[in-house]
Image (cartoon, one colour):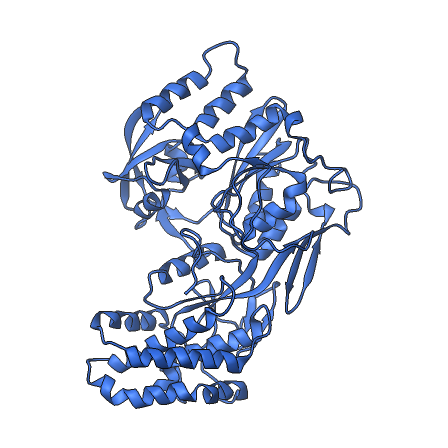
Length: 550
């Protein structure tokens, strides 16, 4: 089964789709989710659990998700597919697994997970859909192989045949997607990734709430650490007790060197407490915090002043529902960046989200202009249906005094790359080459609780080039290896440099002190801020008032 790089697997661009429960027909619809559509756990629910069907026998029930997957590919994949060919691939893989099946009782728990996940779903399957019955006909060799194997398999142990049906079906679906693009995927119930996919989908939908402290974390280095607080969120336990760049050494006494590990230990039951051992200004201290209900924030801002540049640093975690509105609110009269005349947009580690939100962020981030730019192409969406997104000057937030800066790395993917690519002529980008993923995905929960991720469209930029597998190269290159050389490895060295950069010495201006202090803690951010000290050195892509490059 195809997988993306570590840290990116659970992330795909999501487009809101309508799925008819009486058939497997998909149509694009980015405007609303009708009441007839079942949305379960943040993904579109594509069918009915067999426990509620009166028309299907055990084998047909077990193969139900396979038929759903074929139907989804038939009606919604980015390009037309041959249903009969897909069925042939599925049959070959499924029958091969039947012949090689070995009974392992520990795998039975996956069957129970499926029933738990689908608890309370009451929709019925309509057996009159002729396309559905055609798939039943096409898959009859697989059904026959299961029927033939059943007597012998049932002697192996409790629920052995049920497990065989599930695993043969999983093998069949995986074999089909192995012939497609590298982003279409299948996450079986009971697999390591299943819960992570569901959690990520909930987070992007804006429905997820959890017990935590409310902070964005990042690590200096994934092997040696330390983890540090990139941005504490306002009105949260972190916002009231932690500061940007506090180093997190231990969580409840357990050392942490990776942001992901620290975050998983920090999350917990609302109302419980945890102890963070942090280092601030060279001094270690313990901070006791109570976990509170946290609704994820996709965008948080902070204002920095560098000379006459009032820079709004905007941290983004993902392109979840409402991120464009959150970014706009930072620049409103009551927002923390109300007086900003430029910005730094941080898309490092932002592995994607919702397509429409990315488009809205692009429109908001472009410089305001009175010129007619309505014919300027920003993004091209291609697939079975195509769309061209053009610039809308009325949606721009500011007439920037200085072109904004974008922070990016190879963890910037999907929706982030839409924004980075579309804004390239108007910004200076700092960091590493982005991941390189131009697929627009949607996720479906199948009838057994498994998740089917499918490429439905691709995005191209104004030049109509496909950047899948290529990514976007920054204007100012700064990668992880340079990061390691730049930052002192030990706390004493870092603190010595930080004391020096804090600004003893009259020859440093306030802006230089700020840039050196922050640069010692986050070199990419330091480089970004230094651009506003010497903007004439970074005028490689000046922007005309009509948009585009001069």
